[in-house]
Image (cartoon, helix red, strand yellow):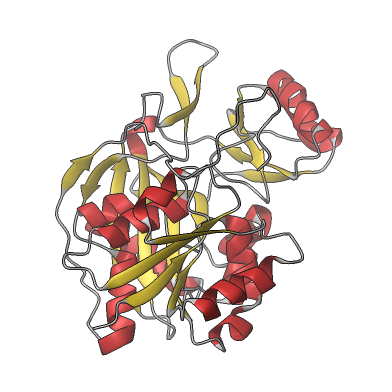
Length: 357
């Protein structure tokens, strides 16, 4: 029987694409032919694919044409996006890509566009009656001076990823100093109140179908503290508390937490989610307090799959023969570590000139 061609984009850098690949490779007796793309040959994700193609960045004018060529040439039946720019392109061009015979696990265009702007997302959630940490859109130095909640997290409002350009301001002086630096870098900036502790942080995945029915959800209680899981660590001004920003590499305890899952699932319903939704939050006074929300598969996709909740595989199986999504998974502690990968077919550079990617 011919294997099913599955394409995963953006497979490098330890990001979402690589996590999806890992989940697909966990399928026992897999009948999948997995194809990967990235914008550079120097990607560790190549070790997990049956075929690899280099492709321009998603903002390149030729990206769509090159992606279509790969889909047609390989008779691709399922497409998973591995980076935020590619998610944006694929979402905006979903009809054109679907016409090539490809199925994609995508949320609605509306929700993807909304969640790519934190300020608009927080405003909408506030309108829906969802309790949130305090927040303020920062467009100027005057806005920085208007922050009246501390500690405050200063972070990109759009085009964020991997916790880059995220800082903690403990008082007005630090907010002004850090905020002016970020504004000088032309970061589209927002401030959000820092709430809870590093022991209260969770990542929750909620999966819904195209009719807004919740198919299942899964919780990971994040274990933060080592170099892999921690982006930033700052002592409170009175030295009594540690403020921590987690990195883009989640690890922790896969667990069942019904009260937390029910609040996350209700949030997905209120937003009319029609696909994958990932929530990063703190649990404070019996409430889910949202930090980040992303309308895509998570950077913890492979961790979830290790616990028996394999979202990419469940989507493929459900699409092919209607196999129901499983809402069951095992409780496990799953940690992350760096590994060394030899890329045997990448060009060797022996000069002092930088590698062009």
